[in-house]
Image 1 (cartoon, rainbow, N blue to C red):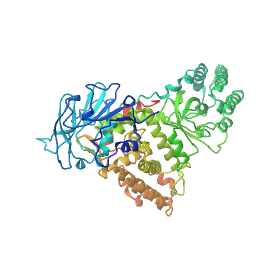
Image 2: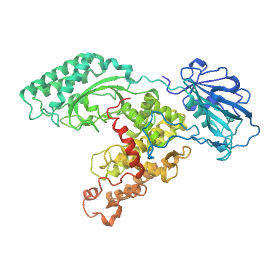
Image 3: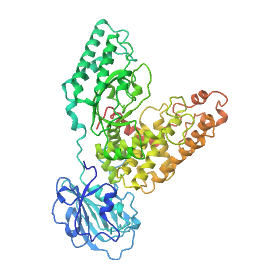
Image 4: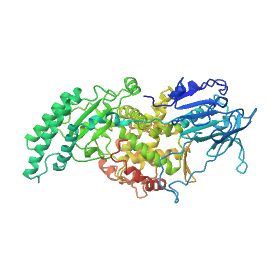
Length: 638
């Protein structure tokens, strides 16, 4: 399946300057040049080759490279004059948009986002070739230099004809204008229609699954927190639980032929269920079936699994109720190649929901073996992450946040938000690298993957370290020509500064602090700006400060090997508090002289306030507008 635009280029390349190869520029981003115009999502034509008077239809976009000779009113854009021997240097056109949602007059977030066709474009290096005259819905985004009173003539504009987007460029395309060309193509290209999980809705509609789901849903209220039958259960409740378990086991037997590779696991699940029932519904023990389940062995794209355990769901239901979930593995070819190379992660299983019981109708986006009720803890061999839920809530929250803050997104980032399956693959790549990073690098003596009680800002730094490692590797892979790599950078940046920062309570919210930290770091490094109630990001400069924050955390870890635990904790606090303002009531902010350094580490942990780093005024205002959107993502699957 093609996730990036298919581009038809006409034979006239007179618009391509010396050294500019449109095919090479497109291929580096995963865009496919097609020979047949009928297969294209966007047509790139010289103005002299425009041979249609209306939209090409079906949402197919058009990018026109203008000359005076031929653009005559198409999409409300006329060429008025050729510009000979023009010096380099143009001006971005000012585009007025409604006030931001943080502004008192802001309204409800919309369903669309503004796109910035000049993202990463150095307008001072562009040379105009044609002046344009605009009518109707046409809007300029580049002009000749001028003044506020007398702006220069437009030389690049967008418009809409029918259901097609149109971009006209009266600009010389050379080795300085590749990003402008890519942005124009990404903006104009038809959006892909993704089918999502409907591809395998048959199993979710299977009568046996519906009976199993019904029985599990009825059994859950009869269970106590530890998974046993409630102490106040009446004899009729025990009889009902027995009937429900038999209904579940019969449904599993009927469904088992659909999952031949899981035959041993499903047989073990039936045995564990019957043993639990026959034993009087005490604390359940599903170790045998857990040991038989190995989704990591054959990670095949589209492979489905039926999973049933008594378990809690992380960020969902804290009780070990019986849960059942139908899942599908997401394992595209490029992920398989990454994992087989420098990013080995044998335990990682990315999945999407097909259907689930109530414990997953929550914010839970993981399926981890350690959540299962069992008599002893084995060596775990897999961990699964629901990339579809991650992608869906990312798309919902970031779309709303961009609208509220009036952030103009690069067109390829806007395409990411519009495409569920592309977003899923992006999150799979992010998770693949993030997850393996927890056990790589100059780790502190106490590894973070072992449960322990520490000040929550240390967990902040560990999670941020893993995300920024994924960002760094994505930058490298982008240079190597992996088209998904830039999308991973967008996902990390946007999910961190928008969704992470305001999701959850303010009690030891280490992920929230990570978002606050990244936002403040970028703001204080002058690549992220909140001015005139509008958020802007310097796309051509933002990468290096993100990488530098990662280096700062890695250096902290490297130094920790030569420090005491208290010394490491103090240095970590200093790193965070130098950027994110601590709570005015903080004891830690007063310095080491005010902390119980002569006692056990518990005293230092207890001295950390539940909200040691409160939300800034920006985030307080954003939270008021965005919190309903975040709340609405519970149970989302895209």
